[in-house]
Image (cartoon, rainbow, N blue to C red; front, side, top):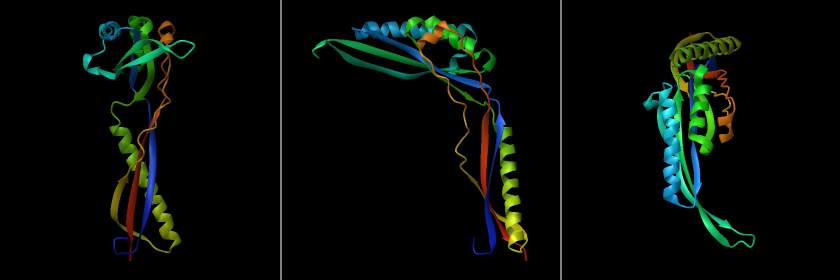
Length: 212
């Protein structure tokens, strides 16, 4: 207790906010016997995906390369003998969409533009500016700690004095809605996007001395 009598209490709180950003994780997956052919096809399909997004108002800084890989897979016959090798080329594209109302339409258009090699790996949601919500959560967390400390002090027949220490503790980060996952076939279907809400959390450990 920092060398004196007192009480230490932890308070936690969260504030629900509606996400205003959708992060789409998509890309293309091309298979061919020849690595150069597969790579050219994948690059062309990804460029079509990128062009579809750009033409619909997505800014280039909101797109970045992700999950890029190339590997070979042997093909075997019924006896297990290797009869050939297939080259897989996977090029990923992570896109930040800043309008949840049109995000589904944009993702759908991008997948359709890339064609049958398109992949949809998932959607996640975020809040562009959680400053206000975090401030509210911090205030509520402190108030919770204060109320608990006052109860403890009263039970001990004491009165709270000054605050000796305030330590913000890790809250585990925001609770994100469950990500939506799908395969390339979603290029042929509607893609509703429901961001729901996420919790911005704060946790604080406060130490008070006892008065008197």
